[in-house]
Figure 1: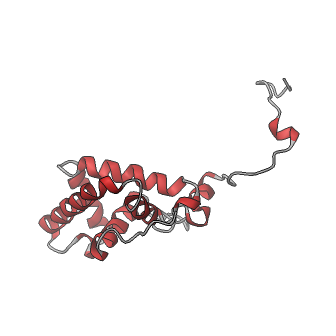
Figure 2 (figure 1 turned 60 degrees about the vertical axis):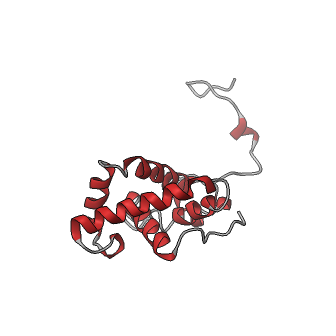
Amino acid sequence: MPADPHVLTAAEAAMLSAVAGRIVPDEDGSPGAVGAAADRYILRSLAAERAGLLGAYRDGLAAVEAAATALFGPGFTALTAGQQDEVLASAWAGPAGPFLTMVRAHVIEGMFADPRWGGNADRAGWALLRYAGPRRVWTAAEQAVTGPGGERR
């Protein structure tokens, strides 16, 4: 996707990465949303087909930032992972809830979409699912339709 990913300010983009990283954190050596470039996927989509959501993203990120400063003083990106989780839980229960629900859906898309759209870097999301990705050639055995007992139909 050739769209320019610089649609948010550097601070907004850093905050989006931090939020995405808390929605799907790194775990047991597997990359989370940031390692899978779900944040990049979101930025690219905001520069293209989701340009109409840019205002909602800016407003939503500002609401999460306000929740962070109200709870802890420093901004969201300066907080520990645990504090960020507290901020997100608080913000999800408040006016930023619909925004965070939308971001969660976009993070999941970025984790598991075809890598050509800017997310799922190195097929990290697919690796979590043990999915090798699309193949151009399927053998006859792989195309065979089988019944519940494994018999060919």
